[in-house]
Image (tube, rainbow, N blue to C red; front, side):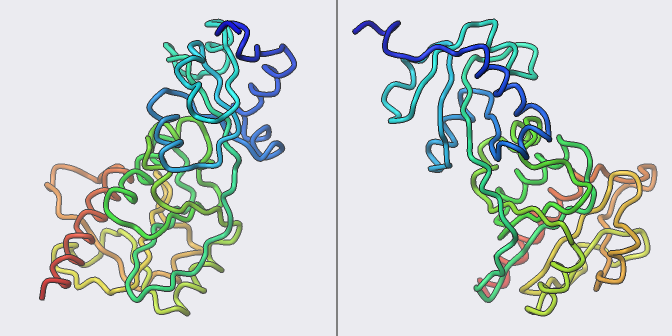
Length: 260
């Protein structure tokens, strides 16, 4: 059997259904999302993510994965991608994101996102969370869908390296975490400098909306506000950048304590 015959071809009906995964409604209805890019698909395979199918303009490249592989035309690849120059490699992933599972270890750091709307920011924070050893990421109401294609691309393979959950009631989940001994910390102007702060063993870093910060509904949940020392000429930092700095410093502090 020739390579041309060995792989299924994409029907028009199937293409329409896959294109629905580019929308929030389509992802919710199908409980699926789409990976776009060769490295991202490889990362998902390595992480044993719940992949259902690979679609590729070069299907032979994926023949040893043990997954169903569908041949794409270049035109179909362009219809499935939000990038200007798609690589031609995609995967369909089951959306198995669930509610947060309470940590069972003695020390943990959780990232909670309150209405962080920009998909690039959400993906970048997930990437930092994975890079600096966060226990989990909670995406609260108003936050960009963690399965949005731009979130997944911005997070790169790190998306599969840290548990991600959706929250419909972030205040309730923060309360539960506090009952388990967590302190909730957030950034603020009238706050203790990050480099002078003694960090607790169990903490939640709460990052708010790009423009308005943490919502008034969640402000009573905050145990302490921290600030990042920056030049006076700079008004503030992007939430993605701030999260990266904070998570890096938190990990460094945790390592210092473990060596004492």
